[in-house]
Length: 332
Image 1 (cartoon, rainbow, N blue to C red):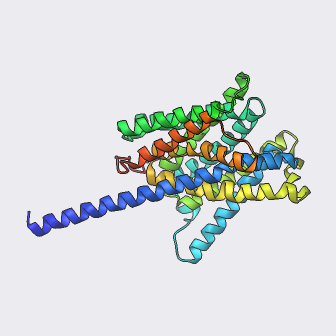
Image 2 (cartoon, helix red, strand yellow):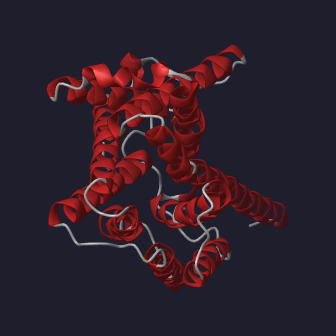
Image 3 (cartoon, rainbow, N blue to C red):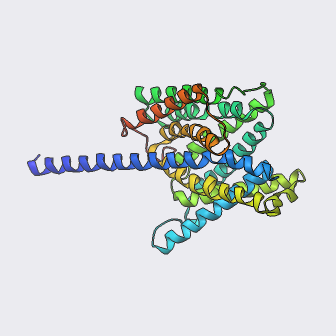
């Protein structure tokens, strides 16, 4: 091999490493942004409830407004010459089915968790729901060939330990209602499916289009659910006044449109396990927002748990290029 060829290979390898680092930093930033935005839903749901907006109405409007926001983002991208969407007929049938399944999973996880909130404490429901990062990591290793080294497993363990402290530190775990716990766990399984599908299921669908389609599909399912239980009229609750409308609008834009797009893109850049572990920042930020907006001061145990989760986020960045599987890991 000539010196010129060898030098070319070194330059190419350096360029690839730099590109991986850039993708890792961007992906991490997007997942953290998603966690911050998703964390606003706790206070917003409290404000909406105080204004007479029920859980089903909130999740339906949130998904619908989120889909509108992302659709506008796509339209702007197309106007600027970017490939923000592809014609549905150009998407392989397998990818279309996975997008549909992701929309169902999105609706199921929200309905399951919000129903669980009505049967058990929010802290206990979230504690069960946030088993999903560990399940995502296991599924990614066993089924999709992701490679998690000791540092990644350590980050997962530290984040889950911190999560237990953050949520258990409320002192309000309450009774173990079997149905409530089961619904929260079912929501966790739906989130596992959603995350893995976003990573492996529809690679031919651009992230903005995938976010719009999954949220749009969820809206249809929420409307069908409301019709089936005779609650279709309650979907108009946000129109009763400004106090009912403003938290729903913010939940749709800041709590759905922005974070869903950011999270799907972050999953694709980082891989499912790393993105899911970073997403455990959400309850930490949620506790901070509750302290600021609702005067719910964190306990010392919660502060320790938050520090552990932040430490796990730092651990994930120490080796950003540790062998994630290719995006299209499922055979066509």
